[in-house]
Image 1 (cartoon, rainbow, N blue to C red):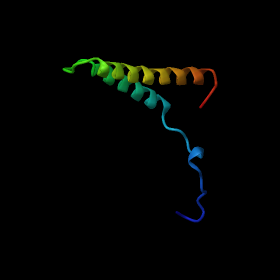
Image 2 (tube, rainbow, N blue to C red):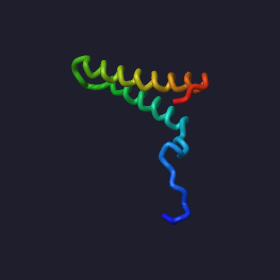
Image 3 (spheres, helix red, strand yellow):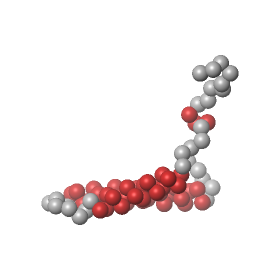
Image 4 (cartoon, rainbow, N blue to C red):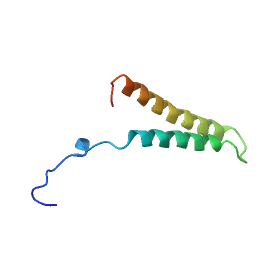
Length: 73
C-alpha cells in the first residue's frame, strides 16, 4: 500500500449488486423447494425446506418494500 492512498473503512465502500443478491435468493428458494421432490421419509425435512424458502422470499420482498419507501438498511 502506497503512503498516499486514503485509508477507508468497510462501511465506506460501495455495496454489492442488489439485483444479483435478489436473484440469488430467489434461485436458492427455488432450489430448496425443488428438494421437496425426493426419496426421503417424514415431513420434518419438508417443513424446514419450506420454512427456509419462505424466509428467503420474505427477506427479498421486505427489502424491496423498504427500498421503495425510501427506508434503507
